Length: 395
Image (tube, rainbow, N blue to C red; front, side, top):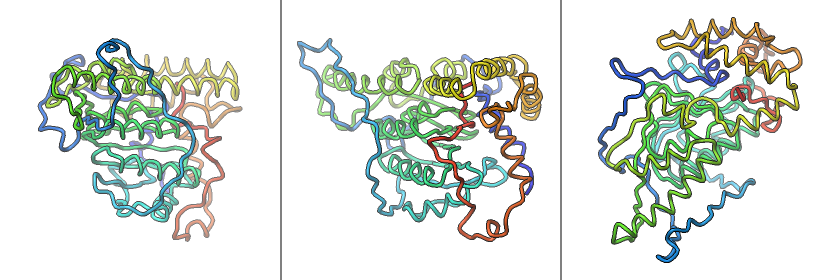
């Protein structure tokens, strides 16, 4: 088996080091605020359709508590469906420039998903490429893919997304599913993540951005308001739901405030600095807290301290504007040895453990039965419950 291409390794490096490089356009300062005109909400947007309870005039200043969604599995409807709002494909390779995006999912049913995802089980890495609107259809797709990935033991999951947005409530529901199941969200070069897609981005354990991220005002398509006061009351209720969602998923609630002041026929493009400041780039701080506790219990305080030091050193020594990808990867690989990684006790939790996993996979002999199995690769014994999630580490 050939070694994993540099671009693939670099993607893994970026995920492990919690760094996404998004260079400004030529002649554009990193803090430049850009606003672009859009045609309207028909092809995406941030559209709210769910009913809201608006308090009476005497209680207008009171913000009612926002309940978080109830955790726990739901009974899945496995009726085969055809995607109408977007397109999706499954690949076991992260290097899309060399390997493409895999076969498009023409029918989304249990058997079809198992057949498409089974080849990814041996490497435990899967990339879902999705292009299109975010609606209940997308939420159902994510729910089914998560269930099959859990069954096959695929614990390293990448959502490679290109979306102009869609339904606000459906996007947040899909985001909560993503937040509980260990995903890296990738907005690759040439792709967009606009409007309600920002809710998907905020849910990832790690967010890698090389494309464009934009926001604008939420649209109440189901509103019966006849005055600005009535419409603002409805939007305030939706706004409270959005703030609660962002807060529980580790993103700054200031994003919700920014959305309120951008006309829905415009797009406020977020700068590199803003993406980092508002918690939409790199590690998810909410996941960081959970992973830190897990690593402390499993690998010890010294491990966590060395890992923190490694990430700070990488930022200081390796990351610089204009650094090419090969130089960045070589710097990180060389640097990790200075901090005692891979760790003997916790090799799978160490920075860049994907390089070690990839090397072992490439060098290990593969049984003939595995090579000849038309249905794909053997299923890993790992389950999502004990997965190291080294693609989405805490630091």
